[in-house]
Length: 200
Image (cartoon, rainbow, N blue to C red):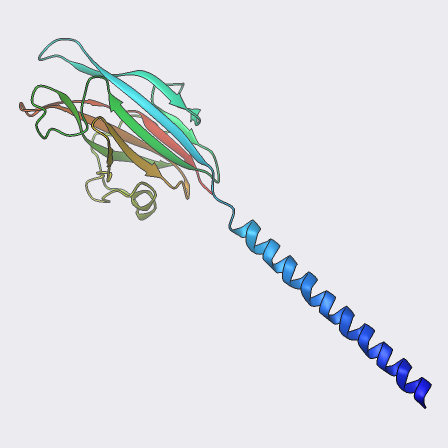
């Protein structure tokens, strides 16, 4: 009887140990799964430096250079980008010798606003839209923009940069129009590249 009891006790101990080990393994596996789900999305950066060329009143806003990690699109038109599937994009705009708003900056060029428009399904942005705005709920949400006017909410950084973001949740193409204002005069010039989103 004593031998039987000792054997049963030993078996029970081994069973409890195996169950405990299994629970630890299961918990570790679940934590690993959680870690995979929490992996951050890759952000593709697109820094666009613009320059004002020409003389008044016929100035033009042109791209001076780009520092970008996103693919070019639309026959490599300057400023046109393609955001890879599953990624997000950050756009940083700057005007050489310009400012990011007109407060106390008369005589300087400032980034006034960015409007979206011409949204089409797929990877071809087509022709520049005649009107801006009239965005789908998806595009308005992706760019944090007003669906009616197409105006993007800009984040002003320092004294000469403005940023906006694209969460890229669906496959479509859209134009973004950058407006620059000559502070104190109300005159504006614009630049209109496009974005192709590959979606999630």
